[in-house]
Length: 360
Image 1 (tube, rainbow, N blue to C red):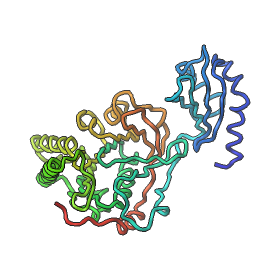
Image 2 (tube, one colour):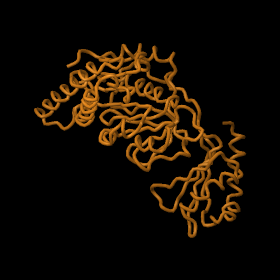
Image 3 (cartoon, rainbow, N blue to C red):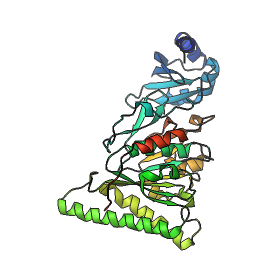
Image 4 (cartoon, rainbow, N blue to C red):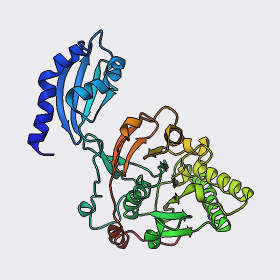
């Protein structure tokens, strides 16, 4: 956004906040500073009685109307109880942000334990996550950007040394483009193949656990002998869908054990679903996946099934473009615009990716 536009947005807030706050009964909210964000303006306020966070939150729509903002978001400073932040968003989302592949190192493989870039938050900062050993859950309706979010994670993992990818893709849509990077990949609904893959993965986990016991270690780090294994499942609700109820229950039980036992043994699970409900994702499995992303979902119940009860803020996703998500790693949900990885970018990423050696 041009400097002149930013200046026209920040100056009214800077000079008129005292009178606007007084008229709204927020006179105890003293102006501290204003700064620009990709979506508009961020204002820092110091609170004095009778002003309170709840009073400011209750007035957020009137504040937005006073300044012609698309919305005003209210956040508290986790380090200061008397400080509150107001985000005056003049746009509802950042829009498409291309994955910074052009800036990527030209000589992979890279450290498998490095943080991976996922996207841009509303302050313009890059959000990095460390998914290995923690797990990822992605929930969003069709068209919300769920498959693209998987691509962003795969782009980072593909460049990592000592990381083997295993995949289950019932829709035969998303993981096909990455086929040559996967050590094992099931395309379709075959419940026998799916059960076999999960049983093999559990066998590896058990062997690695025995190895850890002989070395006295608490956690297995990725190596050429024991590469990190990342199981990517897209779409979880369709896995084993053509099998019997008993097959489905068997698959769900195996996956739960993989997620539960895999962390110490360098086995991580990424699950994506367009039907994020409690019937699809049981609470136990969800609780074991540290990074959770809710893109556009059907309702609050689907968001709660992804993030956990009480984490969803619908105002963050209203009018959102594909790829905008709420991310939580157990704490308060944070908005992020996930990078975009177009189809034409995938072959070059795969071609330059690390090639795993023989598997155990």
